Length: 202
Picture 1 (cartoon, rainbow, N blue to C red):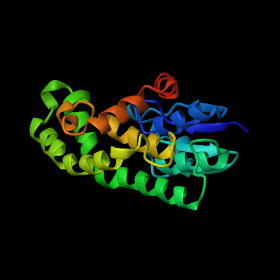
Picture 2: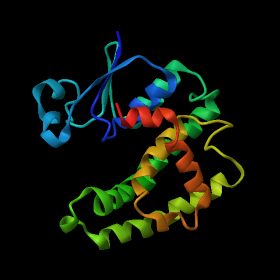
Picture 3: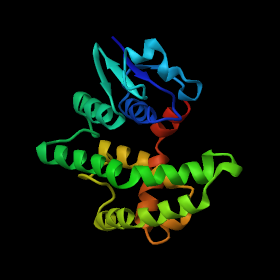
Picture 4: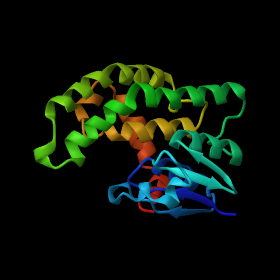
């Protein structure tokens, strides 16, 4: 059975799509557009009763939560994105959870208020507060990347994919990266990967 990924590229479904493109995993994108309310349909709620995308169906195993799907797929299929040992597994999980708890909420507010919302609905103060709130985690990431090009090990892994997917939301705040040139270079390199472009255009 082909892996099914539920969602659209302009959502967190980009994450499992990106990973599938990186590893060449055969997959089917089942489009569920939240802007049209399709995530509330009985058919999709049978897949994810929480009513959120993404979800995946991998030969009958249904998983929700975007970072859970990427970690699972990386470990199942192996290769350079997957952990080589338990220590790498722990580090990849740590950085993935860190991105959600420390950065994602603030990064999303930047994205909405500086790019996605109509101009009249944007809250400049909220966006600026989110930039300030992201300075500390961005400094942590900058320090970690001081002597290494990737988050874990000597290669691009699922940890880089997960954290870069979160930090991409903060791109409309260039001032955030003025004191974090390593973060910006790492992020730009991740988003320049062919598999990311293929996922965005799926």
